[in-house]
Length: 364
Ligand code: SF4
Image (cartoon, rainbow, N blue to C red; front, side, top):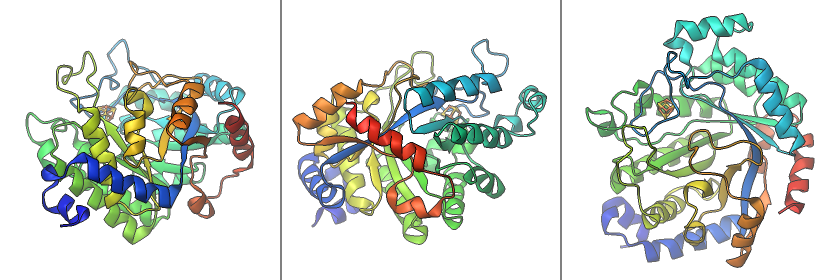
């Protein structure tokens, strides 16, 4: 039985070693020996969210002293810092639009002249573009008209599919109290992004209670949507990390080998034109294993802001990362938040960010 057939039939029985060899071969043929990253400034516009995912410490309720929403002057200060540091991407990342659940948040937005989070994000996106930064926004499950509005000022949009497993929405599972994590809602938005021709980032989580077979099913779903719309530019394989203070603080984390297995399976199950990404700050000891398993991208790395979603896991230093890549035969390269084969789909000006990319390549 060949490896791909085996992954579909009995993923538990497929060992890492042959999978990694086949996946690395596929990566070398499609993406070569360059490993890419996106120099970004990270703007977590708000940490209010109506969902309660079991693994999350980012989310806060409005009455929590740690709740925040970035005011316009804070947005501008972050963008200016990112531009000064030569970043190319402004990552706007938040939970699902909180005005659906919290009237106090809606009033806050209205005080700044915005009716909705998406209106505020469109304003922020314009400010980013004015500073030569390319916005990439992941704002949870959005309606069709909201995607259209955001794409006028973004280079790409994203939504982690996370998992197609409906089992994970059952009582006792991570997504039971997270209505926006129901797979059907996320598949529907990903399909709508495809109908609109939006360069799109998807991804899956590893270690949230899913089985290997459910991971394979998630990858098949992403591949099927891409087969229909050709819009998935990258897929993130993101491993669960236990956060102090979250309901899942004591849950076991997936091993480095399991993350590498998933990277290799993803490389073999996804079309070659989809970039495959894993965050180096969540895998500080296993970068080399992930590269050996077919990885070609490290995602956004910020020289100016922390990973607000995983605050205990600092971004690696770019010079160190470049040296580790070089030691195993790879070159670290900066990229834009839109991949070259999708550039023709978007309307924002790429020229300023392109120039900064070149400067970052020289830096590490
Ligand atoms: S993971 Fe995202 S959607 Fe889930 S609770 Fe946290 S912020 Fe909300």
